[in-house]
Image (cartoon, rainbow, N blue to C red; front, side):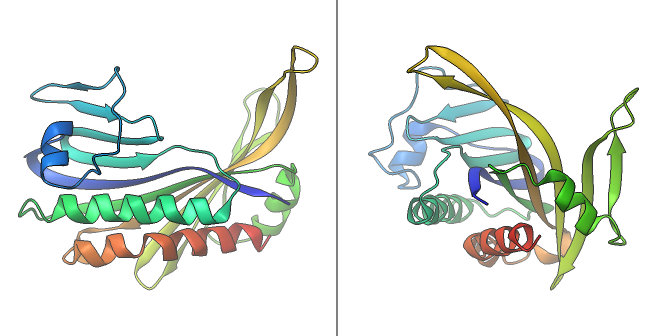
Length: 218
């Protein structure tokens, strides 16, 4: 079984606040390393801003919400941990720029597992009290399963579903299709736990390892 992290994001939810997401400003404030190269499709408006970087990191600012993300599928665990530490560093520096009370904080991890293992996962977790099955319309097939559990006041929400993956075979110059299991893990911190935002962001690697451990446990 090979569990691959394909995406990680930190979402900061505020109230009556428009996020200040500007590449030059963030570089000047040393939130973003100067080595980060901005993509041409980035844009900045008074209401919505999106910055995309060539190394897979993104920052999106919307009214009452700021999202920090990296999407850089990598099976090298040391690279994953380096990306998590970079993301943690960026988020920590950003929140120290503003005196804001966050209403909620969400940490999200997206994984895929190369072997299908989907039915086996469902069979093992279906009897958990929080498990909820979603059925494919007209087929009677289980489309996905949702479940949640709590760890020290944090709520972990997990969704698993079977997805089709299309791969390009460069040798045969054709596409190949197979199925993998997709896992989305959301770690939710409600308002009562957001007083120390820096500490919450500091738990990014711990939450990654707990999420991975939970999935691999099945």
